[in-house]
Length: 545
Picture 1 (cartoon, rainbow, N blue to C red):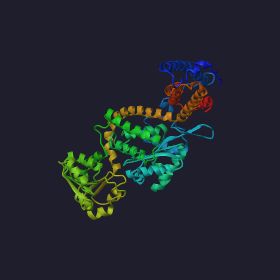
Picture 2: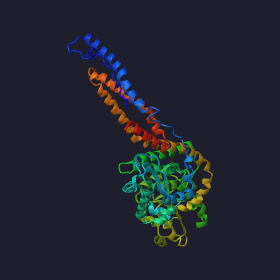
Picture 3: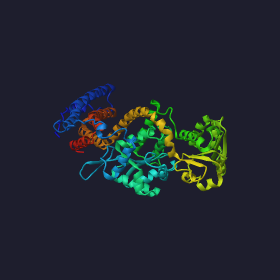
Picture 4: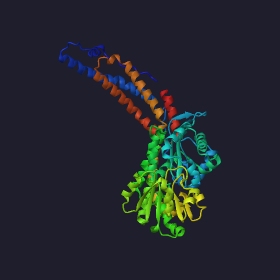
């Protein structure tokens, strides 16, 4: 870099900075006024040329060209926003984990590959849902909410996994994780799941789907918005995604910067879709679909209309409340709620005073089931609580059993082997909701338009993470140059007061900040990974970082 020669300041002018302690007020005022003039002259003649020269030489056209980056459309990057909604493509993604290695995604923090190109962290999703796996497989991988944090931590103990978050509901099991090796990280997670669940690798691979980069982000947004649910627009999944965010970002959770931002964006997107579209109005939930199933089949199975039925509900949580909410308008004869304690059942009685709600404690469960025409199971039990054996011992008349829990609370296969027992699980609800879903496709398209904006916003933030180390280096280098140049003229500034020195500090920092603002903004907004990599290399060479 060329050396800029400092102009010589006459000694007489420098001496005016030193005022004797016993000088008169007038002398001090005159001296300070003169000092300000000298300070102004020095900034114009010394500091500003130095800073401009240092920066101009760095950014001269002959030494460097930032270049332009193309704003490649999402479609051009071979990604369709509807990809996550089509099971066939999930099947394709499932095989891709074995056959090819995904290209690096711009997520932040880089490592160097052997060929010198940056290897970057990526968001990956591995999961299964009602679209890809039967309830038999889903229940084996299911994780209770209180164990989501521990399950995420266990995943981050694997060598290639940096962050992890677990979402487990009755219709889906999903793991979001961050890794710098999609192929290796995916293999480690699948092996971990196989060991934990007891499901062999082949069966697990046939049920799982894998999405990475933008596909994984898009899927998370659709899930939170209820677009990927068995019942389109259902609201419970948003609450579950919010819990996933809260648990994963807690002190005990395993989410880092990337997953925290992703889950937060997903929750915000879910709220926006529900407030700006009609996707949540006029739809059905798992609970309402279960009640609809009973309404359709009770006459054929039990030879009774729904208003003639005595209902039993095992559990008194949110699903039980929703069941009562949908049973009440149908004027069923009675609703017996079986629970360990009376507290929640009493709350239901207060919420639905016009319904004939009765309390039964856990020891009376089988008697309540035997005395009811229909039993809904929605507890948090990890094993079936209604089995072929205890049903055979207690149930003598025709009954319907509807299990909306995962893991299942009812051994439906064994129960259906008994005479006069008609057992159903969550997979049997698909036919009930199919007609409702067809009417809501237009609302799905409206919701996806909003989600595209949310995904773009996350993508822009995501891209900027890869430039953070470079920006930090650039700022540090500029600050080092600023301090060096100030140190060179420190003797000439010795007469400045503390306030005047602070002014010089602010002024020089401001000049540096304004000069660096352009290149730093450019780095943050670059979408093309290759162009960004070349720009970073040029900056490293230019500033000797």
